[in-house]
Amino acid sequence: MTRYRQSPQLPTWLQDTRADTRPAEYAASKVGSQGLEDPNSLSEQRPTKMDVESYTQPFLHFITQNPTVFHAVDAIAHRLRSNGFIALSPREAWADKIKEGGKYFVERNGSSIIAFAVGSHYKPGNGAAVIASHVDALTTKVKPIPTKPTRAGYVQLGIAPYAGALNKTWWDRDLGIGGKVLVKDGKTGKIESKLVKLDWPIARIPTLAPHFGAPASDPNPNPETQMVPIIGLDNSDLAGSTTGEIPATSPLGGVGAFTSTQPERLVKAIAGQMNISDYSSIINWELEVFDTQPAQL
Image (cartoon, rainbow, N blue to C red; front, side, top):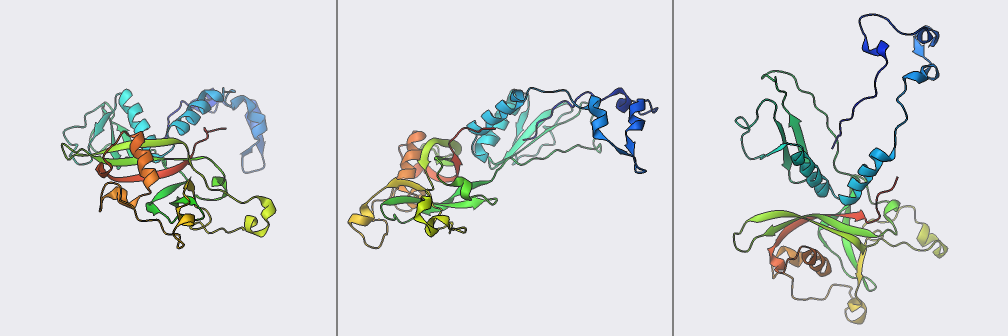
Protein backbone atom coordinates (compact mmCIF):
# COMPACT_ATOMS: atom_id res chain seq x y z
CA MET A 1 0.00 0.00 0.00
CA THR A 2 1.23 3.51 -0.80
CA ARG A 3 0.20 6.30 1.53
CA TYR A 4 -0.23 9.87 0.42
CA ARG A 5 1.27 12.57 2.60
CA GLN A 6 1.30 16.31 2.31
CA SER A 7 4.56 17.63 0.95
CA PRO A 8 6.45 20.22 3.04
CA GLN A 9 5.54 23.83 2.24
CA LEU A 10 7.62 24.98 -0.69
CA PRO A 11 9.44 28.33 -0.64
CA THR A 12 7.59 31.19 -2.32
CA TRP A 13 10.06 31.38 -5.17
CA LEU A 14 9.30 27.76 -6.03
CA GLN A 15 5.56 28.32 -5.99
CA ASP A 16 5.64 31.34 -8.32
CA THR A 17 6.65 30.29 -11.84
CA ARG A 18 5.73 33.56 -13.49
CA ALA A 19 8.81 35.50 -12.44
CA ASP A 20 12.26 34.79 -11.04
CA THR A 21 11.78 35.96 -7.46
CA ARG A 22 14.50 33.77 -5.99
CA PRO A 23 16.67 35.33 -3.26
CA ALA A 24 20.15 36.61 -3.96
CA GLU A 25 21.70 33.73 -2.03
CA TYR A 26 20.44 31.40 -4.75
CA ALA A 27 22.61 33.01 -7.43
CA ALA A 28 25.62 32.87 -5.12
CA SER A 29 25.10 29.14 -4.63
CA LYS A 30 25.63 28.39 -8.32
CA VAL A 31 28.88 26.57 -9.10
CA GLY A 32 30.49 26.06 -12.48
CA SER A 33 28.80 26.54 -15.82
CA GLN A 34 26.31 23.70 -15.35
CA GLY A 35 24.18 25.60 -12.87
CA LEU A 36 24.71 23.12 -10.01
CA GLU A 37 23.51 24.15 -6.59
CA ASP A 38 25.30 23.82 -3.29
CA PRO A 39 22.76 22.09 -1.03
CA ASN A 40 24.44 23.51 2.06
CA SER A 41 23.52 27.02 1.01
CA LEU A 42 19.80 26.25 0.79
CA SER A 43 19.23 25.00 4.32
CA GLU A 44 16.24 27.29 4.71
CA GLN A 45 14.44 25.28 2.02
CA ARG A 46 14.68 21.95 3.84
CA PRO A 47 11.63 20.48 5.58
CA THR A 48 11.33 21.20 9.26
CA LYS A 49 12.23 18.51 11.78
CA MET A 50 9.47 15.94 12.19
CA ASP A 51 8.54 13.62 15.01
CA VAL A 52 9.86 10.32 13.61
CA GLU A 53 7.85 8.12 15.96
CA SER A 54 4.58 9.70 14.82
CA TYR A 55 4.79 7.86 11.51
CA THR A 56 7.23 5.01 12.19
CA GLN A 57 5.34 3.51 15.11
CA PRO A 58 2.03 3.07 13.21
CA PHE A 59 3.97 1.42 10.38
CA LEU A 60 5.82 -0.94 12.72
CA HIS A 61 2.52 -1.81 14.39
CA PHE A 62 1.01 -2.55 10.97
CA ILE A 63 3.88 -4.90 10.11
CA THR A 64 3.64 -6.73 13.44
CA GLN A 65 -0.12 -7.20 13.23
CA ASN A 66 -0.08 -8.20 9.56
CA PRO A 67 2.86 -10.56 9.05
CA THR A 68 1.64 -12.14 5.80
CA VAL A 69 0.56 -10.66 2.49
CA PHE A 70 -3.01 -11.86 3.12
CA HIS A 71 -3.23 -10.09 6.48
CA ALA A 72 -1.78 -6.92 4.94
CA VAL A 73 -4.34 -6.85 2.14
CA ASP A 74 -7.18 -7.54 4.57
CA ALA A 75 -6.05 -4.69 6.82
CA ILE A 76 -5.79 -2.30 3.87
CA ALA A 77 -9.27 -3.29 2.68
CA HIS A 78 -10.67 -2.67 6.16
CA ARG A 79 -9.05 0.76 6.25
CA LEU A 80 -10.42 1.62 2.81
CA ARG A 81 -13.96 0.63 3.82
CA SER A 82 -13.74 2.78 6.93
CA ASN A 83 -12.83 5.73 4.69
CA GLY A 84 -15.78 5.39 2.33
CA PHE A 85 -14.35 3.11 -0.37
CA ILE A 86 -16.72 0.58 -1.93
CA ALA A 87 -15.60 -2.97 -2.71
CA LEU A 88 -16.04 -4.13 -6.31
CA SER A 89 -16.16 -7.74 -7.47
CA PRO A 90 -13.60 -8.77 -10.13
CA ARG A 91 -16.25 -11.13 -11.52
CA GLU A 92 -18.79 -8.41 -12.32
CA ALA A 93 -18.97 -5.54 -14.79
CA TRP A 94 -18.36 -2.10 -13.29
CA ALA A 95 -19.91 0.12 -15.95
CA ASP A 96 -23.06 0.85 -13.95
CA LYS A 97 -21.32 0.90 -10.57
CA ILE A 98 -18.61 3.54 -10.94
CA LYS A 99 -19.84 7.09 -10.44
CA GLU A 100 -18.23 10.50 -10.53
CA GLY A 101 -16.76 11.33 -7.14
CA GLY A 102 -16.85 7.68 -6.05
CA LYS A 103 -14.10 5.72 -4.27
CA TYR A 104 -13.63 2.00 -4.95
CA PHE A 105 -11.28 -0.95 -4.50
CA VAL A 106 -10.95 -4.52 -5.74
CA GLU A 107 -9.07 -7.52 -4.35
CA ARG A 108 -7.57 -10.51 -6.16
CA ASN A 109 -6.85 -13.77 -4.36
CA GLY A 110 -6.55 -11.89 -1.09
CA SER A 111 -2.95 -11.09 -2.05
CA SER A 112 -3.33 -7.94 -4.16
CA ILE A 113 -5.53 -4.87 -3.92
CA ILE A 114 -6.24 -1.88 -6.17
CA ALA A 115 -7.96 1.27 -4.92
CA PHE A 116 -9.00 4.24 -7.02
CA ALA A 117 -11.02 7.42 -6.79
CA VAL A 118 -12.99 9.05 -9.60
CA GLY A 119 -12.87 12.82 -9.81
CA SER A 120 -16.13 14.68 -9.32
CA HIS A 121 -15.69 16.26 -12.76
CA TYR A 122 -14.20 13.24 -14.50
CA LYS A 123 -15.20 12.62 -18.13
CA PRO A 124 -14.43 9.51 -20.23
CA GLY A 125 -11.15 10.03 -21.99
CA ASN A 126 -9.57 12.12 -19.27
CA GLY A 127 -6.19 11.07 -17.97
CA ALA A 128 -5.47 9.10 -14.81
CA ALA A 129 -2.69 9.14 -12.22
CA VAL A 130 -1.42 5.78 -10.96
CA ILE A 131 0.77 4.98 -7.96
CA ALA A 132 1.82 1.35 -7.39
CA SER A 133 3.59 -0.40 -4.55
CA HIS A 134 4.49 -3.92 -3.43
CA VAL A 135 2.35 -5.40 -0.68
CA ASP A 136 4.32 -8.64 -0.49
CA ALA A 137 7.75 -9.06 1.10
CA LEU A 138 10.82 -11.24 1.18
CA THR A 139 9.60 -14.27 3.04
CA THR A 140 9.39 -18.05 3.07
CA LYS A 141 6.30 -19.99 2.13
CA VAL A 142 5.12 -23.35 3.36
CA LYS A 143 5.31 -25.83 0.49
CA PRO A 144 2.04 -27.21 -0.94
CA ILE A 145 3.00 -30.60 0.51
CA PRO A 146 5.35 -29.71 3.37
CA THR A 147 5.46 -33.08 5.11
CA LYS A 148 9.03 -34.26 5.52
CA PRO A 149 10.48 -37.40 7.11
CA THR A 150 11.29 -37.09 10.81
CA ARG A 151 15.06 -36.99 11.31
CA ALA A 152 16.85 -37.78 14.58
CA GLY A 153 13.62 -37.22 16.48
CA TYR A 154 12.87 -33.81 14.94
CA VAL A 155 9.63 -33.12 13.05
CA GLN A 156 10.45 -30.92 10.06
CA LEU A 157 8.42 -28.61 7.84
CA GLY A 158 9.06 -28.14 4.13
CA ILE A 159 9.36 -24.48 3.15
CA ALA A 160 10.49 -22.60 0.05
CA PRO A 161 12.05 -19.13 -0.34
CA TYR A 162 9.99 -16.35 -1.88
CA ALA A 163 11.66 -13.41 -3.63
CA GLY A 164 15.11 -14.50 -2.56
CA ALA A 165 14.47 -15.00 1.14
CA LEU A 166 15.56 -17.92 3.36
CA ASN A 167 19.06 -16.76 4.23
CA LYS A 168 21.04 -16.52 7.47
CA THR A 169 18.74 -13.83 8.87
CA TRP A 170 16.12 -16.56 9.34
CA TRP A 171 18.32 -18.75 11.51
CA ASP A 172 17.71 -19.24 15.23
CA ARG A 173 14.57 -17.14 15.30
CA ASP A 174 11.17 -17.92 16.79
CA LEU A 175 8.97 -18.38 13.73
CA GLY A 176 5.20 -18.28 13.44
CA ILE A 177 2.96 -19.46 10.62
CA GLY A 178 0.00 -17.70 9.04
CA GLY A 179 -1.89 -17.07 5.84
CA LYS A 180 -5.10 -17.92 4.03
CA VAL A 181 -7.22 -21.03 4.63
CA LEU A 182 -10.07 -22.21 2.39
CA VAL A 183 -12.84 -23.75 4.50
CA LYS A 184 -15.95 -25.52 3.18
CA ASP A 185 -19.24 -25.05 5.00
CA GLY A 186 -20.66 -28.50 5.70
CA LYS A 187 -24.27 -27.28 5.40
CA THR A 188 -24.19 -24.98 2.39
CA GLY A 189 -21.16 -26.38 0.59
CA LYS A 190 -19.87 -22.83 0.18
CA ILE A 191 -16.10 -22.35 0.31
CA GLU A 192 -14.93 -19.35 2.30
CA SER A 193 -11.48 -17.81 2.58
CA LYS A 194 -10.37 -17.16 6.15
CA LEU A 195 -7.20 -15.85 7.75
CA VAL A 196 -5.12 -17.65 10.35
CA LYS A 197 -2.15 -16.43 12.38
CA LEU A 198 -0.16 -18.61 14.73
CA ASP A 199 1.86 -15.75 16.19
CA TRP A 200 3.70 -17.74 18.80
CA PRO A 201 6.96 -19.72 18.33
CA ILE A 202 5.92 -22.82 16.42
CA ALA A 203 8.98 -23.33 14.20
CA ARG A 204 12.70 -22.68 14.29
CA ILE A 205 15.65 -23.13 11.93
CA PRO A 206 18.48 -24.13 14.28
CA THR A 207 22.17 -23.79 13.60
CA LEU A 208 25.27 -25.41 15.05
CA ALA A 209 27.41 -23.58 17.59
CA PRO A 210 30.60 -22.08 16.09
CA HIS A 211 32.88 -24.42 18.05
CA PHE A 212 31.66 -27.35 15.94
CA GLY A 213 34.04 -26.14 13.27
CA ALA A 214 33.57 -26.55 9.53
CA PRO A 215 30.00 -27.95 9.64
CA ALA A 216 28.89 -24.80 11.48
CA SER A 217 30.53 -22.38 9.03
CA ASP A 218 29.32 -23.76 5.71
CA PRO A 219 28.91 -20.67 3.47
CA ASN A 220 26.41 -22.40 1.17
CA PRO A 221 24.06 -24.60 3.20
CA ASN A 222 21.54 -26.72 1.33
CA PRO A 223 18.12 -25.05 1.84
CA GLU A 224 16.33 -28.37 1.31
CA THR A 225 18.22 -30.32 3.96
CA GLN A 226 20.10 -27.86 6.18
CA MET A 227 17.69 -24.91 6.44
CA VAL A 228 14.52 -26.75 7.39
CA PRO A 229 12.36 -25.52 10.30
CA ILE A 230 11.75 -27.85 13.22
CA ILE A 231 8.14 -27.85 14.43
CA GLY A 232 8.25 -30.57 17.07
CA LEU A 233 9.87 -33.62 18.60
CA ASP A 234 8.98 -37.22 17.77
CA ASN A 235 11.25 -40.18 18.51
CA SER A 236 9.22 -42.65 16.46
CA ASP A 237 11.94 -42.74 13.83
CA LEU A 238 14.45 -43.66 16.51
CA ALA A 239 12.34 -46.20 18.37
CA GLY A 240 10.86 -47.99 15.38
CA SER A 241 11.57 -47.34 11.73
CA THR A 242 15.17 -47.38 10.56
CA THR A 243 14.36 -45.71 7.27
CA GLY A 244 13.35 -42.39 8.76
CA GLU A 245 9.97 -42.52 7.03
CA ILE A 246 6.88 -41.23 8.78
CA PRO A 247 4.90 -44.12 10.33
CA ALA A 248 1.60 -44.85 8.66
CA THR A 249 -1.35 -43.44 10.63
CA SER A 250 -5.00 -42.75 9.93
CA PRO A 251 -4.94 -39.58 7.78
CA LEU A 252 -6.58 -36.49 9.21
CA GLY A 253 -9.80 -35.70 7.36
CA GLY A 254 -9.85 -39.08 5.68
CA VAL A 255 -8.14 -40.57 2.66
CA GLY A 256 -7.89 -38.10 -0.21
CA ALA A 257 -8.51 -35.04 1.98
CA PHE A 258 -6.20 -32.06 1.68
CA THR A 259 -5.27 -32.31 5.35
CA SER A 260 -4.04 -35.88 4.80
CA THR A 261 -1.12 -34.42 2.81
CA GLN A 262 -0.11 -31.98 5.57
CA PRO A 263 1.83 -32.43 8.83
CA GLU A 264 -0.56 -33.67 11.49
CA ARG A 265 0.58 -31.25 14.18
CA LEU A 266 0.30 -28.27 11.85
CA VAL A 267 -3.24 -29.28 10.85
CA LYS A 268 -4.29 -29.62 14.48
CA ALA A 269 -2.70 -26.29 15.43
CA ILE A 270 -4.45 -24.40 12.62
CA ALA A 271 -7.78 -26.17 13.12
CA GLY A 272 -7.63 -25.42 16.84
CA GLN A 273 -6.86 -21.75 16.22
CA MET A 274 -9.82 -21.50 13.82
CA ASN A 275 -12.20 -23.61 15.94
CA ILE A 276 -12.53 -26.21 13.20
CA SER A 277 -13.48 -29.71 14.36
CA ASP A 278 -13.95 -31.34 10.96
CA TYR A 279 -10.50 -31.52 9.37
CA SER A 280 -11.98 -32.49 6.00
CA SER A 281 -13.62 -29.05 5.76
CA ILE A 282 -10.17 -27.53 5.19
CA ILE A 283 -9.95 -27.56 1.39
CA ASN A 284 -6.61 -25.83 0.94
CA TRP A 285 -4.36 -23.18 2.38
CA GLU A 286 -1.51 -20.86 1.48
CA LEU A 287 0.81 -20.25 4.41
CA GLU A 288 3.88 -18.17 5.13
CA VAL A 289 6.51 -18.35 7.85
CA PHE A 290 7.28 -15.13 9.73
CA ASP A 291 9.35 -13.84 12.63
CA THR A 292 7.23 -13.58 15.79
CA GLN A 293 9.37 -10.78 17.21
CA PRO A 294 7.62 -7.39 16.94
CA ALA A 295 8.92 -5.07 14.23
CA GLN A 296 11.73 -2.78 15.37
CA LEU A 297 13.41 0.30 13.94
